[in-house]
Length: 378
Image: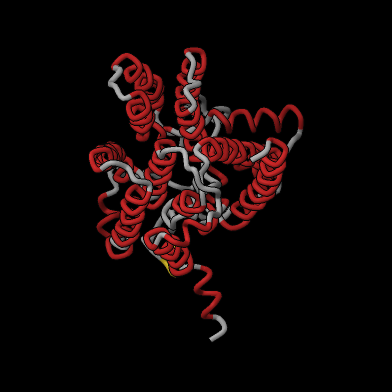
């Protein structure tokens, strides 16, 4: 593709993504601001240093110093984070000359399709984790991860833990990206990455949890934010391990097994389609199993079950995209129509997105909006 056409395509893509992200963060603010939005407002000004309060501290400072309402600062940062994520994803996609199969794999129901099908996905702080990982992976893929960039990432990893402590349960994906792109085990680099996540986590762990948000709630009222009655500031931790919750909601949560099986099927199908050698596929599946196992404590500590699954599948999908060989096909290529397996994959992904969606919490699978809209006419 010529440079001018590539630049034009990129500008159209960036414009569409900007509009989409603005709509997404505002829609999430309207329908689920009690947790997805309010989480961004946790701060240090209330009673001092507390977990995940770094960004909220900046938002409160900006409001008190410049009278810029809290919601506007949050909207700006949320939008910037997701534009950054989709920017690096586009760069990675273009570098690999990705086609419609790669795009649809990323848009499977338990991956980035959740950005469209679930209001909370994309409004959470997890977008920062996605951005860090896709940028890190992109620089690895293009062999542009210089020492200075790597040190910058280490600083960003440490800072991100003060934004949300859950990120430490996904540090292993950065190690896997290093391993699969360098082909060797580098204990020094692994150790630095783990330290950059776990050392701040130790500091956060020692500070405890703030449960008094009287001043923050007052600021929220001043900004005329109509916060939902059930919100993160009303949430009280009664136990560290949420066994009682899982026991009580086992019927709904067990439905995640169906969504996970479907998504694993798409992962296996995709790796076969992209002609990963059998030995490489085995290593990748084992690596994903290992990474998922490391994240399991998070499922027991926090009850956003679907959200933690989403993070695992999204990070692994980005890793797979970074490892595929550079394609010789166009995005839409007539040769794909002649390959039965490719057509089956495309139809199955489209059918899955039509039929069901995966919520980020509470229940493991629901009827998809397109299907509900279709049934509305009957």
